[in-house]
Length: 178
Image (cartoon, rainbow, N blue to C red; front, side):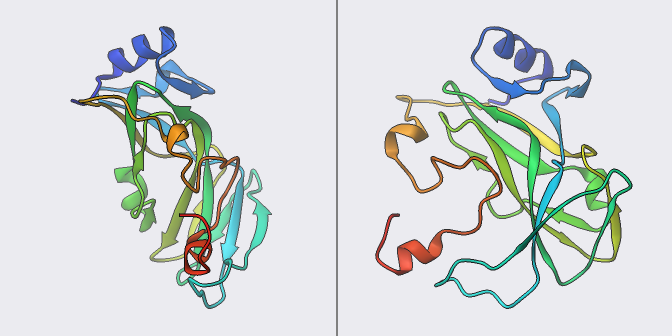
């Protein structure tokens, strides 16, 4: 089941959901509207799954930054979100899609027990100006069935994520952590 906006607000007030900073005006009928953070990692060279991704890190100026086609941007949500009770599903926003921005298509599931600032995969179809803290997507909370299985207890590779994170597939390919 998907939580409604009022149910998200109630679960947050009860301490079952983390959304920080929280703005009740960002609640919608079945989601919370999340915003783009202030920083991007620009990955504009060839990529190899067996080595760490090279990038340049930039701060998005208040006046905005033009995203260019054929460049992979790794961004971050301004909000930190999570829950030990609910799983999360992070989507781009329809208005972002209408600007030709694909955001976070490959990894939308946030497991129970994983409270983070989400790393975002961002691509642009055409040059498009984006601004820090603009609405960029919707966060849905899902009720889980069965015995709770916290992400933290599994010790998975992104457990310690604190900011924008590159792919860690190279660790697996080198015989490291999974």
